[in-house]
Image (cartoon, rainbow, N blue to C red; front, side, top):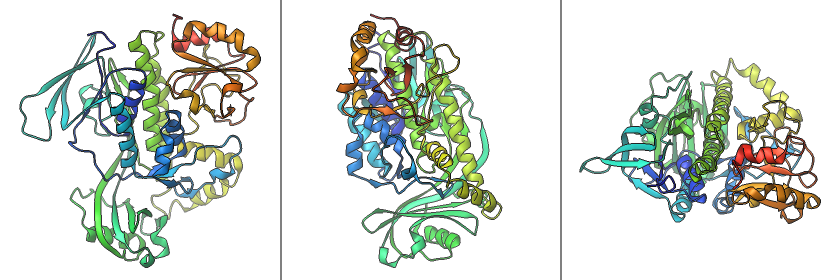
Length: 500
């Protein structure tokens, strides 16, 4: 088989693996997803889909359908210190959603399968071997008596198989982290909302040393999350309604008037970041690469950003136009972001445990959040909206603050998964001529043709209007060239290889 007919093997059919499969299929790359569960889990603990995730989904034309099945996220918070995204100046951002993660997974799975991805369910990876031309994995059935192992060969292997990743272990990649291990319970109960006390709806620290969260998850259905920091060894057994009610009473001092338990599970959050996100032809993404407490949607946005960063780079390598070292930029760009997100969650956990000793810092952060710059910084941090990569061609200073960040309003122009050169009308002819050799992988669009009139948006938030100066974006939406940051030709060669 040629490289373009060898599939990329993705292990794990969660949001990360499915998003990566969508990205690869958008570029025409064959994909096989291996998933140990025989059927999708209909009960997902996650509900927060923050603005950064909605931005990524909009970039691929998926945001509208998900938005129709959710409701607006009420805001953002830093360790339950509530922030005010509505106070942010600059271009409008997508509104986050409260929606079951299972719906997001169903949406991504449908897109992946419709675009040609294969999903092998009920199989787990038990061994892997790398060679100069690919990776071979040994699969074993998990949903039936084994009838002999299967061998599957691919060009590359991506581990998206969660915090306790088998692929990461088989690839020999270490997973150092902090001592934070947080345990809790999450589940849905049927309840008459008229019988609930005011503090059954909301999220807050409790004086007994934990966190309680309750939010609507459907008609007469309450999503309950309890977190304790003083439990010692977490209970790994099943959760009954009485167990959940006892947890709620212990944390809040109030009974939970629930009629029936719909589902519940215990969870333990491990805090770590892999030593490397690549070992030869094996890559780590999502929770297999980094894991931390799922608070406010940052974990999901960090996972999907991995997928969108890696997808186009693998596709470029397999299509034969990737510049030297492009695949190495995945670790270089995403590993620092995984560590930054992990430390941000470490800081939030430190503000939760124990509530008495953290009261002073919580009070300080609450007051500081009234300042616009602090509010902006914390909103960007907890949503993952401030991701900026070091893309300057010379490795030195980056004179334009848009470099490495994202550009608001460009999502409709990036839905084909190609690079984008956005140019002012008066410069269109000259710049289009320069970019002609990359027309098979970069679209050139004049500002007047851009439907939404993109404007600058990045961690510093303010910059010259995109209509006034040309800008080059990668397929993942990050800016890699602006006027004054070297030549356009050099940037095209750096990120899109040699011209055809």
